[in-house]
Image: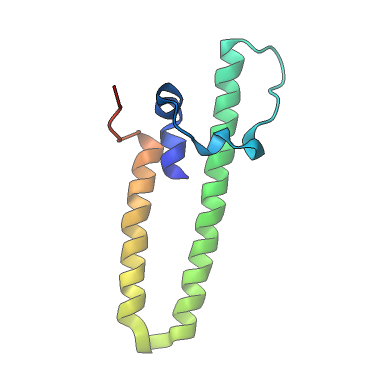
Length: 106
């Protein structure tokens, strides 16, 4: 979701599917349908996508905490490895929130 947040403009230009293209995100914008209103509506959709990504992140944090409590110290290395993987993946997501780092086509 963080990737989609950062790549809305690129996905639109390249005709790629983005999370904000799904019906759950498509509501009629209030007010005039000028380009400015479209850009404002896009910002609303991006804010909703970011909220959803953060919600999912909180769920992941709770799941990892519960897993850690369940496994206890017997699988400490496994839990540490999982946390490292999550942190690295999250870092890429946060980079996408700041800037779309993917290569544009064409």
